[in-house]
Length: 260
Image (cartoon, rainbow, N blue to C red):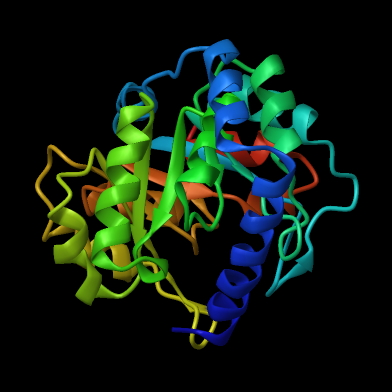
């Protein structure tokens, strides 16, 4: 596992413990009762056949540093919705990505598209936080979770009416992910050990996944030509963030990638 991922996970455990001290599981469960009902994330992507876009609200990253200085999460999400995105991913990690859970709450109040909490999920508490904030789905990263954790967190996500986008990079994790019978599988094209991307990575793994599982390509998608390669490889959807955040005209870049 890459050093950066280990550092993130170590910090995340401390962060979760502090959050539990501030707000109990029981309090979060009460908040969930007041949250708007979850929407069908996968169905929204399928409705945009042959390619649905999960557009990401992302201010910074460990590899790129600050990506967008004029960062207004609500305005960015509204731009995504207006120009053809099917769903929105909201990065909530504070230390490494300069995100915040409040961004999710604010976007839910302003935009009708299904929302994914993009986070390093290690505990049920984070999933409950996501639902209380209005998320419709969460990201589960296979490289961060052992078999028991992966099963338990996937089941807990479903118990709250949400869907999990189960992500992997290492091909060795694909079989353990597929044993979950997931609604969605995402393949991250970025190798965190060398911080390089290979678009063909998700296209190659796509061949090992049945078509009833919604398949998402992640990272390294920068142009319409890249999107066309994904479609030719029968990839159903794409998660795109950094290239949108770096674009002077975010809406125009969304339309370009989608061919609109």
